[in-house]
Image 1: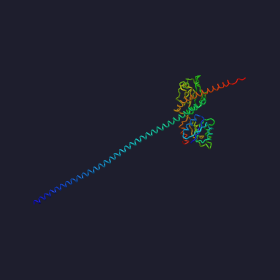
Image 2: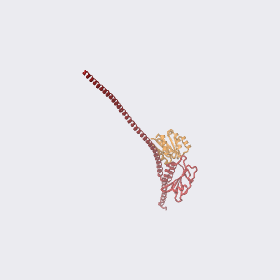
Image 3: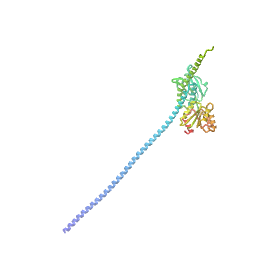
Image 4: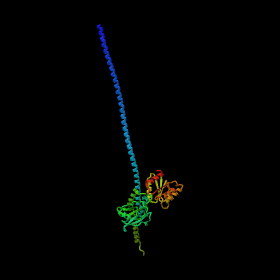
Length: 272
Length: 122
């Protein structure tokens, strides 16, 4: 009996131990399940955080590419502006080049001869063809009489241009002051020999040897351009020296011929 | 190489035009002082374009244009008139005679070069 009771007791104890073991195992399984779930969650988080990083990386890349694109667009605009500037500058340089070529040809022609009449003809050609004057006259200073005397004209007769006294009237004042005169009305209808629309002094340094008086312009000549003013100053200088030196040369040539004739006459043997 | 005949009695203007023409790449310039001289040059040189003044001694530019247009050998050579005559009726007259273009003086070199290029394809 006692043995039976002890066996039952032991069996109960064993059953309790077994139940506890079962409970513990159940708890372990639950814990295991929880841990698996947690691991899965963590794995998912890690995976998700990896994608976000990539997205962030791509976003940064896109931002930097966009930045580069904007800076390229900015540079393109700048280059385009620079191109426009270069094109405008090219046109300007080309124009300047043409003007210089014109001035070169004009001064080359002016100094190509020592014949006084030829120099006057070249001055007329320049004023007609390069400036576009229709009626004008070249007046030179006569030192003895202190007057400006017309020596060449275009579009008007020489006789229609009166002499001008130094310091009087437009031409006389231009000769006295040595400064160019420009009328406000360059397309004046009426012609007046005393009132040129433009008057340019012919100067060698500060010494005025004459003037060019322009009375009217060709109908197609609407206004004066920069090259005209450059031509005016070229004429004021180069034409003056060309006229002055050719006049001196022609005078000295004439004197030389006279002296030569005189010498020839002296050398001739006296007739018996 | 296009050959350009410059017909102008004024040496300054002739040199100026020639100077501008020589700056057009590969072009050769032949100069004549009037219409008769131009016809002589035409008989000895192959010319692709004529630039002619109107007011010239011996033979003027308009007479030259009419003779060029009447000659079967030269009739197709383009002629540009460069003149001080700026009136519309002068232009119409020159075009009626056979000039291809009309440029009143004072000329703008750039404008002349552009016009010349439009004929010789520069």
